[in-house]
Length: 158
Ligand SMILES: Cc1cc2nc3c(=O)[nH]c(=O)nc-3n(C[C@H](O)[C@H](O)[C@H](O)COP(=O)(O)O)c2cc1C
Image: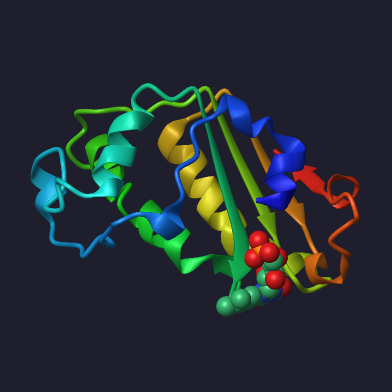
Protein backbone atom coordinates (compact mmCIF):
# COMPACT_ATOMS: atom_id res chain seq x y z
CA UNK A 1 0.00 0.00 0.00
CA UNK A 2 2.94 2.33 0.60
CA UNK A 3 3.99 1.99 -3.04
CA UNK A 4 0.38 2.24 -4.22
CA UNK A 5 -0.07 5.49 -2.31
CA UNK A 6 2.95 6.93 -4.14
CA UNK A 7 1.60 5.88 -7.55
CA UNK A 8 -2.14 6.48 -7.22
CA UNK A 9 -4.26 9.20 -5.59
CA UNK A 10 -5.98 6.93 -3.08
CA UNK A 11 -8.55 9.64 -2.27
CA UNK A 12 -10.07 9.21 -5.72
CA UNK A 13 -10.69 5.47 -5.51
CA UNK A 14 -12.68 2.97 -3.51
CA UNK A 15 -10.35 0.73 -1.51
CA UNK A 16 -11.45 -2.88 -1.16
CA UNK A 17 -9.24 -4.50 1.46
CA UNK A 18 -9.11 -8.28 1.01
CA UNK A 19 -7.46 -8.58 4.44
CA UNK A 20 -10.54 -7.26 6.26
CA UNK A 21 -13.25 -8.78 4.09
CA UNK A 22 -15.53 -11.62 5.01
CA UNK A 23 -15.05 -13.99 2.08
CA UNK A 24 -14.93 -17.61 1.11
CA UNK A 25 -12.61 -18.97 -1.60
CA UNK A 26 -14.10 -20.56 -4.70
CA UNK A 27 -14.73 -24.24 -3.85
CA UNK A 28 -15.25 -25.36 -7.46
CA UNK A 29 -18.84 -26.35 -6.59
CA UNK A 30 -19.80 -25.97 -10.27
CA UNK A 31 -22.90 -23.82 -9.67
CA UNK A 32 -21.67 -20.92 -11.81
CA UNK A 33 -21.03 -23.26 -14.73
CA UNK A 34 -24.82 -23.35 -15.13
CA UNK A 35 -26.04 -20.02 -13.75
CA UNK A 36 -24.74 -16.54 -12.83
CA UNK A 37 -23.86 -15.73 -9.23
CA UNK A 38 -22.23 -17.88 -6.58
CA UNK A 39 -23.18 -20.29 -3.80
CA UNK A 40 -21.72 -17.67 -1.42
CA UNK A 41 -24.15 -15.04 -2.61
CA UNK A 42 -24.04 -12.82 0.44
CA UNK A 43 -20.40 -12.26 1.31
CA UNK A 44 -18.02 -9.39 0.57
CA UNK A 45 -16.60 -11.06 -2.55
CA UNK A 46 -20.05 -11.16 -4.16
CA UNK A 47 -20.50 -7.46 -3.34
CA UNK A 48 -17.03 -6.75 -4.81
CA UNK A 49 -17.91 -8.56 -8.04
CA UNK A 50 -21.16 -6.57 -8.25
CA UNK A 51 -19.23 -3.27 -8.05
CA UNK A 52 -16.92 -4.38 -10.88
CA UNK A 53 -19.84 -3.88 -13.29
CA UNK A 54 -19.48 -0.10 -12.79
CA UNK A 55 -15.69 -0.03 -12.39
CA UNK A 56 -13.52 1.81 -14.89
CA UNK A 57 -10.10 0.90 -13.51
CA UNK A 58 -9.21 -2.02 -11.27
CA UNK A 59 -5.90 -1.79 -9.39
CA UNK A 60 -4.79 -4.94 -7.61
CA UNK A 61 -2.18 -4.30 -4.92
CA UNK A 62 -0.39 -7.16 -3.21
CA UNK A 63 2.99 -8.22 -1.84
CA UNK A 64 4.48 -11.39 -3.27
CA UNK A 65 4.05 -14.28 -0.84
CA UNK A 66 5.59 -17.61 -1.83
CA UNK A 67 5.82 -16.50 -5.45
CA UNK A 68 2.20 -15.40 -5.78
CA UNK A 69 -0.18 -12.68 -4.65
CA UNK A 70 -0.93 -12.90 -0.92
CA UNK A 71 -3.43 -15.60 0.06
CA UNK A 72 -6.10 -12.99 0.92
CA UNK A 73 -5.86 -11.48 -2.57
CA UNK A 74 -5.84 -14.91 -4.24
CA UNK A 75 -8.94 -15.88 -2.21
CA UNK A 76 -10.76 -12.81 -3.49
CA UNK A 77 -9.58 -13.35 -7.07
CA UNK A 78 -10.67 -17.01 -6.96
CA UNK A 79 -14.24 -15.76 -6.72
CA UNK A 80 -13.93 -14.20 -10.16
CA UNK A 81 -14.45 -17.75 -11.38
CA UNK A 82 -18.15 -16.92 -11.79
CA UNK A 83 -17.15 -14.19 -14.28
CA UNK A 84 -14.76 -16.58 -16.02
CA UNK A 85 -17.54 -19.15 -16.42
CA UNK A 86 -19.96 -16.41 -17.52
CA UNK A 87 -17.61 -15.47 -20.33
CA UNK A 88 -16.17 -18.81 -21.39
CA UNK A 89 -18.65 -21.52 -20.29
CA UNK A 90 -22.15 -19.98 -19.99
CA UNK A 91 -21.25 -17.32 -22.57
CA UNK A 92 -23.88 -14.93 -21.17
CA UNK A 93 -21.66 -12.13 -19.78
CA UNK A 94 -18.52 -10.32 -20.94
CA UNK A 95 -16.81 -8.56 -18.03
CA UNK A 96 -15.07 -5.38 -19.15
CA UNK A 97 -12.66 -2.88 -17.62
CA UNK A 98 -11.22 0.20 -19.21
CA UNK A 99 -7.96 -0.22 -17.36
CA UNK A 100 -6.26 -2.87 -15.23
CA UNK A 101 -3.20 -2.32 -13.08
CA UNK A 102 -1.27 -4.63 -10.80
CA UNK A 103 1.09 -3.17 -8.19
CA UNK A 104 3.23 -5.74 -6.44
CA UNK A 105 6.39 -5.91 -4.33
CA UNK A 106 8.83 -8.73 -3.58
CA UNK A 107 11.38 -8.84 -0.78
CA UNK A 108 13.99 -10.66 -2.87
CA UNK A 109 16.21 -8.84 -5.35
CA UNK A 110 15.04 -11.22 -8.06
CA UNK A 111 12.56 -10.44 -10.85
CA UNK A 112 11.59 -14.10 -11.27
CA UNK A 113 9.60 -13.71 -8.03
CA UNK A 114 6.93 -11.97 -10.15
CA UNK A 115 6.32 -14.87 -12.55
CA UNK A 116 3.28 -16.20 -10.66
CA UNK A 117 1.73 -12.74 -10.33
CA UNK A 118 2.37 -12.09 -14.04
CA UNK A 119 0.49 -15.24 -14.96
CA UNK A 120 -2.45 -14.13 -12.80
CA UNK A 121 -2.22 -10.69 -14.46
CA UNK A 122 -2.43 -12.27 -17.93
CA UNK A 123 -5.47 -14.33 -16.86
CA UNK A 124 -7.15 -11.15 -15.57
CA UNK A 125 -6.31 -9.33 -18.82
CA UNK A 126 -7.92 -12.10 -20.82
CA UNK A 127 -10.98 -12.03 -18.52
CA UNK A 128 -11.56 -8.25 -18.47
CA UNK A 129 -10.15 -7.33 -21.88
CA UNK A 130 -8.97 -3.87 -20.70
CA UNK A 131 -8.06 -1.07 -23.12
CA UNK A 132 -4.91 -0.39 -21.12
CA UNK A 133 -3.03 -2.41 -18.54
CA UNK A 134 0.14 -2.19 -16.48
CA UNK A 135 2.11 -4.61 -14.32
CA UNK A 136 4.04 -2.48 -11.85
CA UNK A 137 6.57 -4.32 -9.72
CA UNK A 138 9.24 -3.48 -7.19
CA UNK A 139 11.81 -6.06 -6.14
CA UNK A 140 14.20 -5.94 -3.18
CA UNK A 141 11.49 -4.12 -1.18
CA UNK A 142 12.78 -5.22 2.20
CA UNK A 143 16.13 -3.51 1.56
CA UNK A 144 14.52 -0.09 1.04
CA UNK A 145 14.27 2.11 4.09
CA UNK A 146 10.86 3.39 5.30
CA UNK A 147 11.86 6.96 4.49
CA UNK A 148 12.91 6.15 0.91
CA UNK A 149 10.55 6.95 -1.95
CA UNK A 150 9.75 3.60 -3.59
CA UNK A 151 8.47 4.74 -6.98
CA UNK A 152 11.92 5.35 -8.57
CA UNK A 153 12.63 1.62 -8.15
CA UNK A 154 9.55 0.30 -9.95
CA UNK A 155 9.51 -1.61 -13.20
CA UNK A 156 6.45 -1.10 -15.47
CA UNK A 157 5.36 -3.64 -18.08
CA UNK A 158 2.17 -3.79 -20.13
C1 LIG B 1 4.42 -15.07 4.14
C2 LIG B 1 5.42 -14.31 3.30
C3 LIG B 1 5.89 -14.88 2.14
C4 LIG B 1 6.81 -14.18 1.33
N1 LIG B 1 7.24 -14.77 0.20
C5 LIG B 1 8.08 -14.09 -0.60
C6 LIG B 1 8.54 -14.66 -1.83
O1 LIG B 1 8.15 -15.76 -2.22
N2 LIG B 1 9.42 -13.95 -2.58
C7 LIG B 1 9.87 -12.71 -2.20
O2 LIG B 1 10.66 -12.11 -2.92
N3 LIG B 1 9.45 -12.14 -1.04
C8 LIG B 1 8.58 -12.80 -0.24
N4 LIG B 1 8.13 -12.22 0.92
C9 LIG B 1 8.56 -10.84 1.23
C10 LIG B 1 7.50 -9.85 0.79
O3 LIG B 1 7.24 -9.95 -0.61
C11 LIG B 1 7.97 -8.42 1.08
O4 LIG B 1 8.23 -8.29 2.45
C12 LIG B 1 6.88 -7.45 0.62
O5 LIG B 1 7.32 -6.91 -0.62
C13 LIG B 1 6.64 -6.36 1.61
O6 LIG B 1 5.44 -5.73 1.24
P1 LIG B 1 4.39 -5.31 2.39
O7 LIG B 1 5.14 -4.40 3.33
O8 LIG B 1 3.30 -4.60 1.65
O9 LIG B 1 3.94 -6.58 3.06
C14 LIG B 1 7.25 -12.88 1.72
C15 LIG B 1 6.75 -12.32 2.90
C16 LIG B 1 5.84 -13.02 3.68
C17 LIG B 1 5.32 -12.35 4.94
